[in-house]
Structure formats: C-alpha cells, structure tokens
Length: 281
Image (cartoon, rainbow, N blue to C red):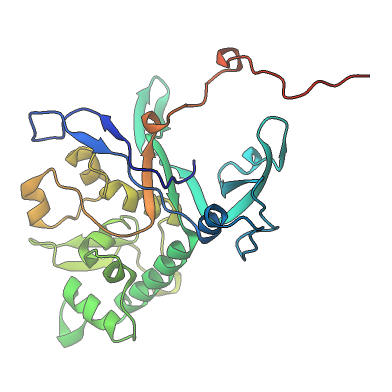
C-alpha cells in the first residue's frame, strides 16, 4: 500500500479497553519516502538514489517487499509498469498466534511500512548499547541501570535514536525482548540475555523490531496485546492500561480491514475485468 496526502479516514471499530462508548479510530498516516514525495510534487522524471531507474509520472512506485520478492512485476498487463522503491519496506506483522490440531499457526493482523534508514540507525545504536553492557558497571555496581546506560551512551557523542523520536530507553529496550532483559522491582536494571562476550550481538530481527515499534503506538490494539510484545512498560502506562505510546518512528501498522479494496483470496472470487485492448491477427 502507498501513503496518501488526503485527509485521514475514520473507521467505526470496537470500543477501546476501559471505554464504554465507540470511538472514531483514525487510520495512521503512512510514511512517505523521498522519492514518493517528489513523484507527487513534480511532473518531470524523478531521479533518486533509492530508485534503480528513472520514475516518470506514468509509472507506479512499489515498496520493497523482502519477504515477497516475486510479488513485484516490472511489467504488468493491467497495472502497467512499476518501479521499485528501496526507500520504503513493507513486511507482514506476523503478530497473531492461532492454535491448530498440529501446533500453532502464526498469522498477521496487517502490514507494517517503515523506512530502512531508520532501521539502520536503530541497528547502530543497539550495537553500541550491547558493547556498553559488556563493560563493567560504573561505581562497582552489581549491574547496569537504565539511567547509567543512557548516560554512558550520551558520552559516545550523539543522542540515541529513541531520544530523537520521543521514546524512553526503557520502552526501546522492551522492543528487543531477545537481546535485553530489564529486571528489578521497578525495572531499573538491564542486562544481556546472552552470555559470552565473543558472541554478543543483537539477537532480534530488525523487521520484528520495526513491527514492535508500530504495535506499541497503535491505539486499536488492546493493552494486553501490546503488553505481550512489550513486557517492560513504565508504571504510568500500567495504571492507565489504555493509552498507547506516542513516538515519531516512521513505522506504521495498517490493519487488513483498513484497506478499501482488500485483495481476494482465490481467483474464483475475482470480478471479471474489462479488456484494456484486444489482440487481432
């Protein structure tokens, strides 16, 4: 799916946890890449580093789908010609677990669209945090605290990506539930989930981290669902139980029911299309 510059459309959904009346839930604004913004504001062909070729007005711009690489068609009989946009990445959420007779089936509540440059910034900052946690804690403390870790990261010479996007370090560490472990009576200590220093690295897949960042800011998800993927939340959020965490990461979750025209599951459900042209002898 692509972003839209039109006003946000509201959907009548189920009431949020803790509320008794239905609320109009706005569809989140999807992030636009630089190439997509130029494609909408100019009539000349767009040339950008994220595009493998020039993008004129009569070509479509498709996001990068790393899990479905064969879904991109450069030439299509109905949709026309398309250009791949490496500045936007589209992945499925894979955040639903359904029990079956033979095990557990993993499904998705929607798709997540994010920008790869923010993913690279997150990877650099997480690697720096892992290196800091491998050192001895300051003041001969038994373990690192979240405040000490953030203060030590500031001495590196830059602000963390969580601070640039309006998120606390405690919530940011909660999105990496395979790499970091926050513990203590008030969740003030942090350590690595894996041991040997020679193999210390980020164990979470970055696509899963971007999905977690999109889920934690989604008001349509109930508090228990957000809490399942983000077990470390501040006490203020635990008391409210409804409010979603606001941040400025360019990672947005769009549910399947928010599509105006969802794709059919089977070919037999597809409505017949009028031929664009006829081939004659």
